[in-house]
Image 1 (cartoon, helix red, strand yellow):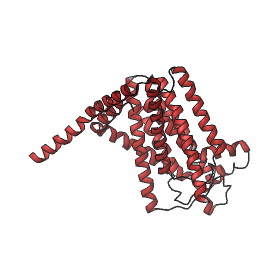
Image 2 (cartoon, helix red, strand yellow):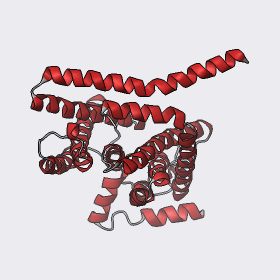
Image 3 (tube, rainbow over the protein chains, first blue to last red):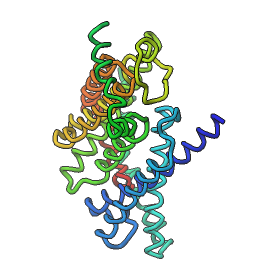
Length: 138
Length: 192
């Protein structure tokens, strides 16, 4: 009984956070003009979709979920929110690839992005190396 | 009756007076609505900046807020290992609007986390932080109204939250050499 209740609230919570995260990413993407976050071509239409998703998420949760009962623990809530936010990001990226219709080009672009981000991380390792050299010298 | 208990009884006494008030408290007191809304605000700050200056400021605010929440959570968990205070419903006759949590009442975890997050944002962006702080305050206050915490639990939780935000702000500045490349890499990857 308790396990069923927990599974239900978890499912409701995941859907709630997924819809609202996706909606919020549309609003944020529309404001910052970050095209790869937008689900639609038009910035205005994406912002409107964002508002609809946010309202849908809150309405769904407030109408359906038993949110006054004992449920998930704080750390679990945070982890699941993070998971759904990442899922929403992936959906945005997937929608962009589908919209462009160029899977090969998207894959190459992703590879370029990963390579560029690895370059940005170099100072971290360089600093560590430098510290190690200093340690060995002393 | 102590001042804390008297204040608690007064705030809790409004329960049952108005259906609208009870519904508002039910909405604010649970672990889902306010925490998710605050987390969404943080997600918006991470992705929604208009220009480079604002992006630096907001992403730094998110780092401070996230670290502050982690510190506040650790402080409360550590405190709970050393000290236990009964919830109000164990000693005072109250109107309960929420289920009965079994962990320590002092300090309020809800207050600590909500204040850590909003004060963390405030440390970097006063305007956005000021918008979040009252909203964050409603969460623990609703817990007093619903009979889950004493006012002193909230006060202590808020202090833990603000102290965590100050500590996190200092650490993010001190560890800029670590955070700057990480944020730059996330930007290149398109996730910041």
